[in-house]
Length: 516
Image 1 (cartoon, rainbow, N blue to C red):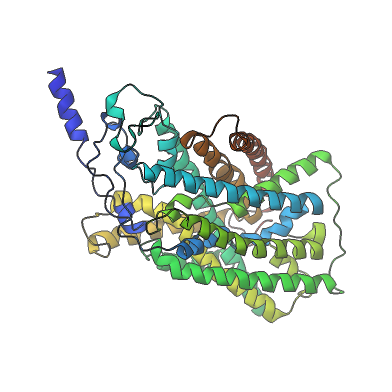
Image 2 (image 1 turned 90 degrees about the vertical axis):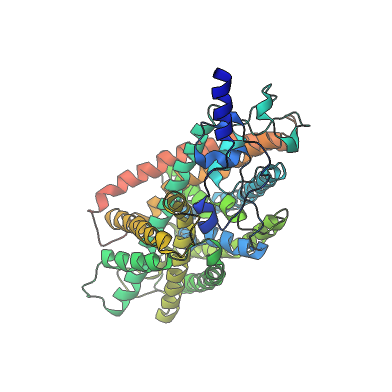
């Protein structure tokens, strides 16, 4: 009887899971790879979300994404108006340390993203393709080595010393850890995006009507409505043209803001240049770690597996081309405004350098047309960023609410998509209006979200999945990066939250001013 019950349960477990609407509609990934691979009984109690861990993975047959499409997605995810906070980040560290850390964080993130791409390719080559960060982490970090259980081996890699896919008891913990952190990142970025876009609209409005009746929360509502309309584009791939425009917009406002900073630095109305750091050593330390957290947020991209999932086969090498394209834009878009903004305003620079160019008292420090055009470019790109970082939330919603057997534009799927996405953006807009901390939000998101996902997990997953020799330079370098950035993340989180608490006294709920 026991054997019969076990066989019945194993047979039930071997049935293919329900069609994944999140993959089919939002990530546009359809079908399954290796359908003949039996689903191991060890995974029968895992969540349906983790089915990909056991070989039930979507294939690439229906994908059309190219490496430059992935490059556009990456650039939009990384190169955004958060570059306007880079002079503020340098303010917390000074010239030498600031530029050194800016370069080091860029080099480390490029290395980390390339490692994560290799881990994804490594898993896919063994029949376990992953289209979500949470599933990749649960798979790789849930591996058991040399399991004697024959049910835990799968045909494509029975000849190796590692048996895949075997789910360790704590892989579920890792799955939910990544879900929570990734959701916090995406929601934090969406809140910051809405807040900064509304701030840009308010800047344009007050320059035209200084005593007008509209307040910050009015502009937050306007931005949220625009995002709710655009959010009805159903899939990540459908954003490729928007994200190409986003790349051009980022180059445009980088040039405009940098030119404005140079002009302001040479202007007789510019504030005196002061590059001194705080006289308090403890304050210097907290400011430095806050700045590192901001840089981690600026370079952060917590959705690389979801972006790589849009690539047409074969993916090998395409993601590296996409990263090279993205970091070519980064080299231009990060260094020029960082240097010119900090040079022009020094320790007086605000968390949004545009506000330094348009002070509350006195004349603007750059031509009105130039600033207006820069603000317009920033505003338009913010809409693209909000769309990109909302995709993970939309995928989670669609997975639970949509019916993959119906068309993506059927009434059955359009109605819940409209309601859920609108409610999500309404929540983000409410939080942006209630807690208008732009610079502090960037710091907290970087320390709590991007550092674990982009600086710690990739090197850990690479060391486990590809298993370089423990004494090899790569293994040691990966371990050093993990240790250093775990410490930086912990201290940065404390520094960011401390700054948030200190700034809490500067505002009231639903304030009309964004707190720096």
